[in-house]
Image (cartoon, rainbow, N blue to C red):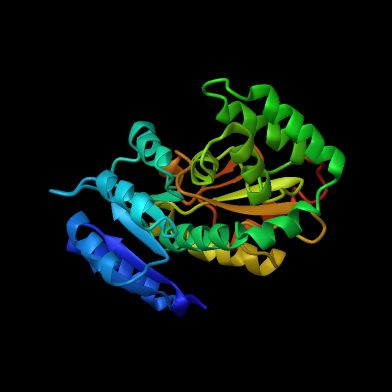
Length: 296
Ligand code: FES
């Protein structure tokens, strides 16, 4: 139940806290705000939170100091960051501390809801009992190949990304159970493995269909009406974001910017970019892929 989930939003810009509250409370989440790291620590000393969404650049106690405190004193609280500087360097520092994911500023309601929903799903799916159940779903030979591959990279610096790439080739995707094996095998915190998987769009945590539909939920596309396009796809294919159709033909993914804002609203199917997509023509575009085999 969403109202059981308590989230603390930490930002020195009141407008960010206000927007997060408005968006997430409408989804039923329980939201509190703190204007900086110090206030956040005081709040967390009084009440447990499932997640903290924090800015990185704040006066006095900044986001990185806050994350370090959370990892030490409240290790069960998941951390998401919200940043206006989502460069690989800043994200890398935060990933090394074990954040789950990040939200770039400015963000759209859909992006924020998507990141929070995926964080909750990840936390639930990484519960030990659930993980054990999922492990049985993979053929033992596949798991043995995975373990062999992981151990061949053990103790080699910088091996996480190549291992994730090879693991995705072996299993087809990177579900929590695969991430946990990699975390154990390479001796890297599970949250760091998950953070890298979420950061790079070529990694996926869900099985993929023959054709991958990527819908851009970035600001330019959002303003030009991509939300209606997304609804139309969901309604017609009977799947949600992150899901795969029953016939395994299509999987639907939401991305934050495809780098083609001038063509907004944009959707990519396999390697083809479709610009100025409308709810009216989107299914026509998708139908053209129904008879085509998977593209490499
Ligand atoms: S916001 Fe959609 S391509 Fe940039």
